[in-house]
Image (cartoon, rainbow, N blue to C red; front, side, top):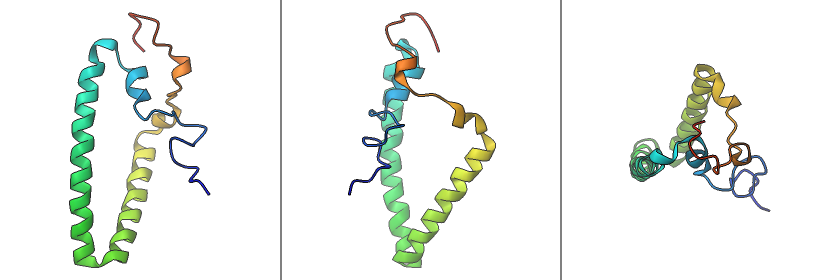
Length: 105
């Protein structure tokens, strides 16, 4: 059975994970934003692997997984409380056509 939460299969999420970058940024800044985005993605993967392996070696595998899951839920809850406007952001590219040159969102 397929995982229905992945972006490629979820009916409510964009098929392209970088659609928000193209839709919500101006044409002049899209390359710079993409470059910074790639740096953070590459760094976060390496730092996450280091953190996970360190936690697993110190706490054991199962407690480290539980701690990571609980920490994720806490961070998501804090962001939801601190920035409720994020739940109202519409990233549907059909509502912001790229053909309108000069318009900024």
